[in-house]
Image (cartoon, helix red, strand yellow):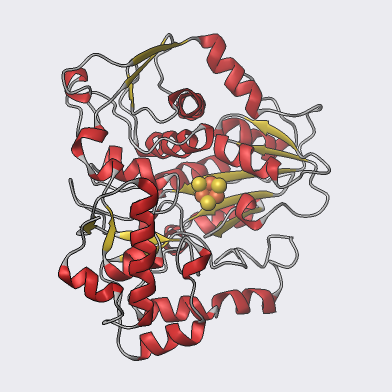
Length: 424
Ligand code: F3S
């Protein structure tokens, strides 16, 4: 593979041991994916903390990191933390009332907030946004065509398809510290054109339709780049649902919605004037089957409700506050948002409304990331394909029952303790 003189010198250790390890990691990454060179990043980066790289061979002790930080080293590109610090996965807010041990314990929370890697990364310039929807809370997103290195699975298609910036799923300490990544796949224009046409009998329009359609399309897409036709123009909430579900059902790093996403002003442009390699018609029966897959319950009494996967945006919080105002939840309800938005919710009066309703506003994590739910919860209502998929995986021995449906059905379940969701 080709390396610049500067990259060769880094590989030889001229910029110190950590930079050398990062270069070794990037070279191996290039060899693995067949990249012939590295690309200098001009966009943004994100990674799960305190992950130092994606490959354990290239970890380094924290003492070395401390030394590096003391020497004044910084990340080369604007870098964000996309999850609560490992291994704690603690909520940033709302932890006291979450009713789940050890997350509701003062000491556990303090330890998680004082996590040393986080402290060091902050000193290197990391913005500890702690959210899977970094692109909505960071206030700084890459622009069209900028090369990035992101890691959160649901954020990858947002970067490529919605922003028109370019990333593979490779955000790590190494890429953000050196500002370089393997040059392959989504960094290259040719790989970004649609190859699969996914049509739908039903016009995809509601939040839940986008979620279920995204989950199914992820399963159908394999490594193709899909173009979705017969949909309404999605709003921000729906785009987030689509991105989250796509990378739960499958592994979609790029898609087009002709007339909506920036690299597809028309279907012809999405396919770069070529014929699709594959075409699929999504029938109503297929959507219903995907919906059924996300639902696993044997009765209608609900123990708990979770909403906020992906983390709720400001408009969702406002809409939810309106619907809960003056009401009382009969079962525990967790509402998850981004840490920075928690304070906005407080200022807007939504937090008070949620508290009065007996719902718990939290930030920065989610049940799947926390590895489960409060003890005794056997049946959970939720409105996210991704959360449904991952939270059930946290219960291998005693399967958790999940009622999946719309946001309104979840609110109804929180207020009545009953599930009345159905496919419409
Ligand atoms: Fe975010 Fe957890 Fe869902 S990290 S996308 S809320 S599974």
